[in-house]
Every structure is written in C-alpha cells, then in structure tokens.
Length: 277
Image (tube, rainbow, N blue to C red; front, side, top):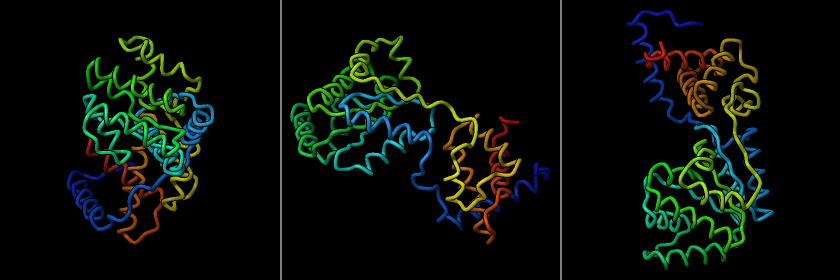
C-alpha cells in the first residue's frame, strides 16, 4: 500500500534496503528474455540477412533494442556480427573500435579498412548489426558522421550482406530534416524494412520477466498500476531495475518474492526522487 511512515522510518527503510542490497548481490537483472520488441528485431535481422538489404530499427531509450540485437548475433555467430558505435569517436577511432570487435589491431586507416573487409569475408558474414547509429550524428561533426555512414554503406555493398541500423528516435528526424539526410537516404534506400518500436504502456507480453523472479504471472492491482506508470513514464529497463530491487529485498528477508516486495522497492526508490512529489 501507500507508504505513510515519517522521515525517521523512511531513513530506516533506506538503511535496511542498503543492507539487503549488499547481502543479496547475487540477485541481478535477468539475461535475455524474449519480448514482442525482440521478435520484431529478430525478424528485421532475418529479413535483412536473407535479402542482403538494409533494415532500420529505432525506438525509445530502454526498449531493449541493444539487448535484442546483441542476442541475435550471439545466437548466430557463424553469420552475424554485432557492432556498437561509441560516443564522440573520430573516424579513425571508429575504425579501430570496429576492428577490435573483430580482433584486428592494424593502425593505419587504409590497412584497417582492408583488414575489416577481409575478416568479414573470411567469416562469411551475412548480417551486420550496427547499434547506436545516432551517436556519430549527435556527438561528432558533419565530416565524421558522413564518413562513418559511407563506411557502413560500403560494408553492405562490397560484402553483399544484410545490415541492420539501430538507434533512437533521432534517426527518422535525421532522415527528414538534417544535413545528412541525403547520405542517410542512400543507406536506408537499400531496403524496405523499418521497425518503429513504440513506447510501451502496459505489461502485456512481459510475463517472462515475472517468471524469472518467480513472481505470480498476474500482478495485483496496485503492482499493475505501478508497472504501467513505470512503462509510460520511463522504460522497460527501469521496470527491470525495480523488479530486481524487490527480489533482493525479498531474498534477504528469506521470503518468497511477491508483488508487495516490488511495491515496497518502488516506493523507496520513488521517495529518493523528490522532484516527483
């Protein structure tokens, strides 16, 4: 129910929560759990691979894009490669990061580019998943962003492989109104698969997360309301964090995890953020 304790009681709750956190550190977030969003991303990967085309995936922060892309490549290592852009990297640093993802150490730009293409050919890679694609456009300059874009286009054209471009909802805006629109259009024009991961508003299809924590499949009324609030105001990632917090508290108390533990964890975390009052 609603937390109605005074300030001293609340401080004691925080202290106990900290102790429970430290003592139950083995209870963490789950590994990969299939969701409707993941199924859509897997479909985009399979289609891009089969047709040797480019697919575009974008959505809100914390919607599981990275986890799904990484999981697909992890399940299919013989033909898939996962790469994640890093924030603020110059073009040379970007190439070195890409090279390291393949175990390459060449330093010069030309030698590294050739080594990347050769390694992907030898691996017979037919799908490259490019994650955080928005970062060169939002954290570097025009010249770097364009060179990174052209390199990815070359990967697809020269290797004749499928490419999935994944990022936040910045991407469709860049396609329409930005300085880079024409260059980006040359990439996305190489396919017709676009997955727009819309923001979640309910817990439908999230039963796998509840099962992981041995929670009843159907939340009680108050927990259901809080879950929907978390999904609407924040993200699936935030929901998983709160599920984890409740599990740690229940484990330390030697109690079976219930939705009441989840509610308690939510209330304590909410109380730390006075801006929500």
